[in-house]
Length: 263
Image 1 (cartoon, rainbow, N blue to C red):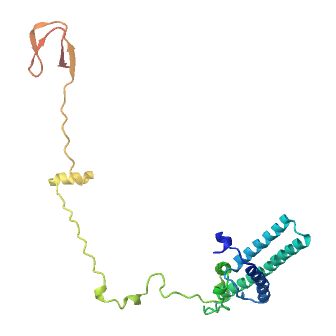
Image 2: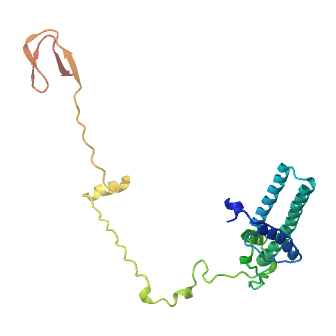
Image 3: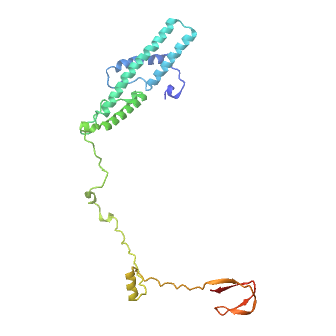
C-alpha cells in the first residue's frame, strides 16, 4: 500500500526523488507510439510520483516563508509545472495504451470460430496495480458493449453451446440405464369401499321417496302434543267446597290465591 493510500510516513531521499523525476520523462519518451504500456521502474510508480509532487510543493512553501530570492523560487515553480505537464502527457499515453490493449483483447480478440486471438500480453508484475485495475474496468465495459450491440451476431461469431444443455434430456440418454437402477413402481392405490346402508323401507315407501326427489324416505313427522291453553285466575272469595279440574285434581278455593284453569 502506498504512502498516499495508507498514510505511512516515509521520507524519500534526494537520490530517490531525483530518480523518480527522471523516470517520468524517460517513460513518457518510451511510451510515445506504443500500443502496449511499457514497463515501469517501480511497482508503485504513481504513488511515488505523488510523493515527489508533495515534496516539491513543500519546498516551494518553505522558500516563500523563508523569503527566498525570486529567481530560486521561480526555478522551483517552473520545475514543478514542467513535471505536471509531463505527467499529463504520460498519463494520456499510458491510458491510451491500456485502453487499446483491453479493447483488442475483449472486442477484437475473438475469431469467427470463437477462438481467442488476443494481442500482446502485458507483464503485470512490472506494472502499477492501479493501471491493472483501470485495464480490468475497461475490459468489463467492453464486454458490456458486446452484449448491448450483439457483437457476436454482427461479427458472425458462433456462440459455443455447453456440453450439458439445460432442459429435457433426449431419449437416447436413457438407453444405457440398467433395469436395476430404475425406480420401483408405485404401490397400487387402495380403493376405499363405500358401504351402502340400505334403509329399512318397503317398496311403496321407496317409490314415494323417489317421486318426491329423496334418496331416502323422509323421517315421519313428530307428533306435536296439543297443550291446553291455560288461564290464570285470582280467587276473590273463599269456599269450603273444593272444585275438581280436568285431571280430577281437587283445588281449594281460598281468597287471594291464584289458580290456572283451561278455557
